Each structure stands twice: as structure tokens, then as C-alpha cells.
Length: 193
Image (tube, rainbow, N blue to C red; front, side, top):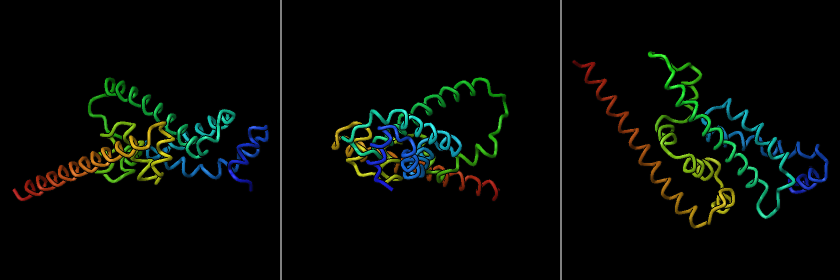
């Protein structure tokens, strides 16, 4: 099949069937990215569909100044950011109206364990922007230049911010591991008593 750039050009001229190879090329990458950003498989599946719909409807505005991949990740980032903001509002409201003694469902518990517990803890403590930077660099293995394009930031600023975010994440992971070790010792001492 044609290159992605050729497919994009053809979709822009009205050959909508040429969008299918674009979806096939990027759907797995975008799904994994959305999973890591949102922490929920179902939300990620829905997000991927929305991201490709947005990409299709806005493809006429794509300019080859940046790679198509960067442009698509930017759409995914903004979509996930909006979903996370809405989720925060829903969580605040649900905490206010949640009945006492409420327990998470098995699905909610499983979704929270998507990452290792210390990594999940660290990811929840990072801001959305920090999480995005970490996901793009560590999990998606994007080069700093592409991350700078996705975020509309200066290359050196992205590198500096990444170094700070990585250091913060490592501290948070170690903090969670220390907490877990203390809990294990407390539980063992209670058993011995």
C-alpha cells in the first residue's frame, strides 16, 4: 500500500477509503498510548475511535511540517486530557454522593492494577502533562524531537522537564515501595503478637 503521506494526500482529495490504512498503521500505538494515559482499557477503546474520527474530520488541516504520527499523537493527547478533566469532575461529585461502606467493583480494581502498584501510584501523583511526557518517552519510546512537536514545546525545555519528571516518578515509586514494606512489617508483627 501507499505510504502514510500518500494516504493522507489521497484522503484530503476525497478518497476516504485511503483512511483505512492510516487507522490500521496507528490504531495499536494510539490504543496503548490512551491506555497508559487513561488507565482504563474501555475508555482507551472509546478514545481511539474518537481520536481517529477527529483525525479524519480534521485531516484537511494537517500540514507536513510535522510527522503525521506527531499530529495524531497531539490529537490523542488533547482528547485524553479532556477525558481526564471530565473524569476528575465526576470523581469529585461521586465522592460527595457515594454511600458509606462503598467498595470498588472487580473491574475497577483490575483497571487500577493495569500498572505495577508503585508505578500506578507514581502515575496518579503526576500531573496530566507530566504523565503524558513520561508515557511518550518511556512507554511509546518517542524521540525528544517528536515529543517537542507533539507538545508544541522547545526541544531543550522538553529534555529538562523530562529529567525532572523522571526524577519525580522514581521518588514516588520508591516512596510507594517503602510504604508497602512498612505495611508488610506491620502485618507480620501483628501476626506474631
